[in-house]
Image 1 (cartoon, rainbow, N blue to C red):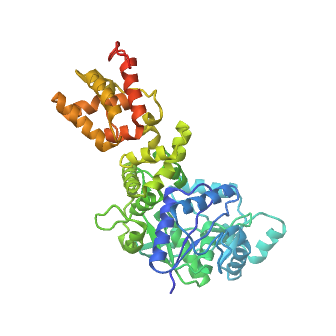
Image 2: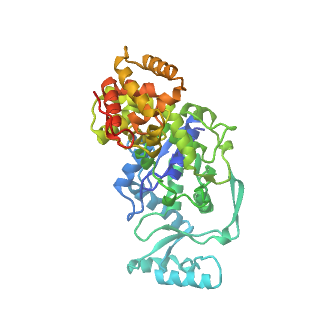
Image 3: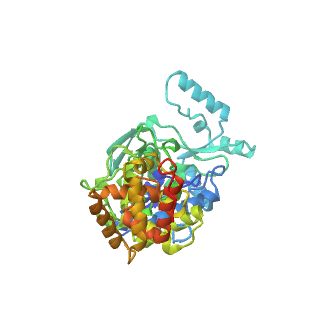
Length: 486
């Protein structure tokens, strides 16, 4: 048997975190089993489905590197893979159920259905269709259709049966058919409902494993009775845990960005997202970092937990930082370059490359580079309060003056020679090296934290370094109102 999994999103919005994880688990399982991963677009919601959302799904999958073997764009022998292109297929299978007496036309109005719901609520019962139209003869139903009465088609739920699911993650789950109503399989507009279309498509596309969020568990008994009504072979079901926010509520926009492309735009790397999504409900020992290749060896449904997964931005940020540091530096430079050019209008790629290299161990997300590197591009940067404090310390101004004299003489002008100069000055003054470094860092960056001071000076260059020391000494009146540069 060839394993075949599918990801079947509704194009009513961008690819969100929950959907992306579902796609990833299906993709990993199919790849590990040597099977096929199918993408199907369930676009039967005529009001909410949009071409923009379809494109967003493709873009999100592309960003994550989740390629599909069959589906839109790639094609396949069991298509079409857009549900709106399969309406004749659904009609054929609906007629089959009608002919076999396993489905019926329902003409109940919205007002009548609302009345039934209200009565159920008053009795504190779950709303359930009263099967009024199930009693109609075929002739009565056809007469109403002839008179242009609007209708839906409902499935005849078998009474008093136990519907069992042997779920690969949750184990055995049993439902009572008496608690389920005769659900709609074809809407009045001629479009199928989710449960009906999914069963027909999964059978015809030979899906062997349905891996999806456990919010779909309640749909499964309805789908199973449809499989049995058609005489289809049941696939294996695996319901993966919900993703919750830190407040233990279902993940939503109030917890931050939920779209995969939003995370791309925020500067998260695809490998970090893949790693993090995989860890939302799955684990292997106590390990946190998993490359794509490692996931393709280690992932299994046995490792998926039943408990809800908590979306933790701090963990995602940590992972992203790890992958930035593991990445080829040139790649990070390429990602940072347009941001820095846009922010500071500096097109010197060699200069930008040197700067980005200094911050690889400090980046959490790519856009951080803009705020971290301001002083490399702007001479009129602002001083932090602590930065000014370092300039006010006893001896700080004299140290800057001495550095102003020594730095122009450093040859060759590199961090090794700069380090010798700084250490030599510290020895001359009989102070610790930090006493020399701190006022210099403040003068050059306005801050108390930066990459190594020798790296900073080397990248800034001799001329810019001297100018900044001069500017600090001459314009910071609260430090030294009388200094005049040569």
